[in-house]
Image 1: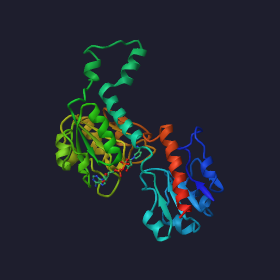
Image 2: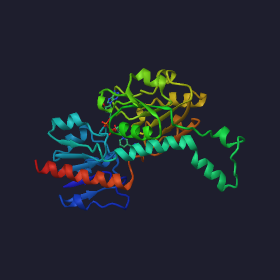
Image 3: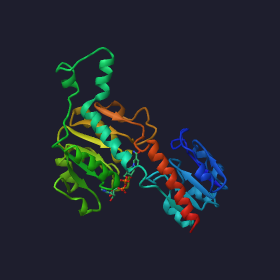
Image 4: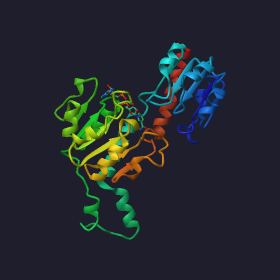
Length: 310
Ligand code: NAD
């Protein structure tokens, strides 16, 4: 028995679960509230989750589970250590959305640099304003060539984002817990976190959420950044202390920020970033072009078939 606890983000009507169905009796739920998890997977052999948490109490109550497929790259929704003690295999899908998330990160940056939505809306309202009165003063356009992008977490998505930034003429500074010299070049070098913070015009976050990275963007580190820096986060919300980023945006220390992820999702009405100046927030969608979702489903099936094959 295979249960998908929260298939809604993956399959909004345009992709099918047929491939998974070939492997057993399949039940797909759109979403699963926490209080329904145990009831729904009590007799399941295989469980897929995207954002539904699977914690110790669930594993204790559902003794049939043999395989968990996390339908995402980040697997912080599952208590992996406890699952291991029960002999349960946990898989994630690290590669399905690398290009999509990198492209989205650069899209956020280009929106900050060009404000295309604002300009288009003004034109549609009858305002053809292309002089200093409004356009260049309130929404200054920014050229990226020659500027420096600092990438915190230089793994798959960080490197892919850096490649596009280099194509735009940017220099790249990388900070990572593990160094891969093969990536170093005239326009890309590894630096310490402090060097990255001090020298970057744009800082983009691509490290996983670990205790060592939680709150890495905080008041102390923001103070080390250039005035007018741009901050991007398409990784995980808790990498940023949101109150600190809000304050820095409101004083202008940070000129612009864009986050596809926030500390609590869906975003709460009192999230500090909602009241910050020059802040773009999107609802955790960087991963979701149809092409990536299809890849994610294909790899999810491959993982299960590899498990069944031993
Ligand atoms: P990855 O594992 O390839 O890269 C992560 C990098 O971070 C690695 O190089 C690792 O060495 C580095 N790292 C680990 N600890 C660090 C630390 N303390 N300081 C600095 N660097 C550290 O992962 P990826 O595929 O590039 O994904 C990155 C993140 O993107 C994921 O963890 C996930 O949270 C996020 N993500 C978001 C979306 C979205 O839709 N917004 C989609 C997919 C992934």
